[in-house]
View 1 (cartoon, rainbow, N blue to C red):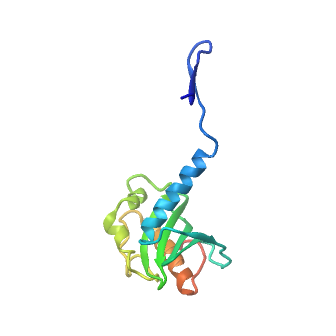
View 2: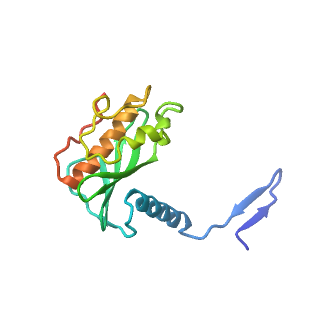
View 3: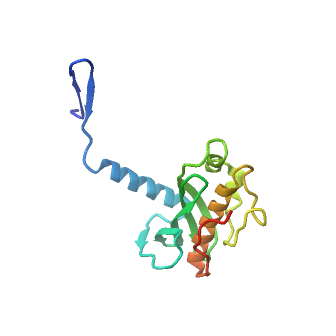
Length: 170
C-alpha cells in the first residue's frame, strides 16, 4: 500500500507512517458530525453560526433544523472541560457529551459514563444547580457544577435568557 516503511538505523528499528494529508482533520469533523446527530436527534445538517454573546462558556454554536448544538468550555477541577450540548428550539436539552476533560481519575472522570448523573440533564431547560434540582457526583462536586454550568449556558443561548459567564463558583 505504500503507507509505511521500515527503516533500519544503527542500533534499532524505526517505522515511518505516511498518512494522507488532512486525514486527522477529516476524522475530527466526522466525529463531530456523528456526535451532533446524536445530540440533536433527527438533524443531519448543521451550520456553524457566529456567537457574539457575552457568555464566555460558549465556544461554538451549530444550528440544525430542529435546534442547536452548543460547544462549551467550562472550568473543571483540574482543567477546562469541553462539553457539547444539544438543545431543541424550545430550549430543552436533548443530549450532552463531554468531548474533552482532564478530571481526577475515579472521581470527576466518572462523569463521562455515569448514566444516572448525565440523564438528569436531559429534558431540562437550564437553571440547574447541583444539590438543588440536580444530584452531583459524590467526591466530584466541582466537575458536577461545571457540567451544570455548560448545560445552563447552552439552554440560555437558545432561550435568550441572561446567564452569568463567571467562573464556576465553588
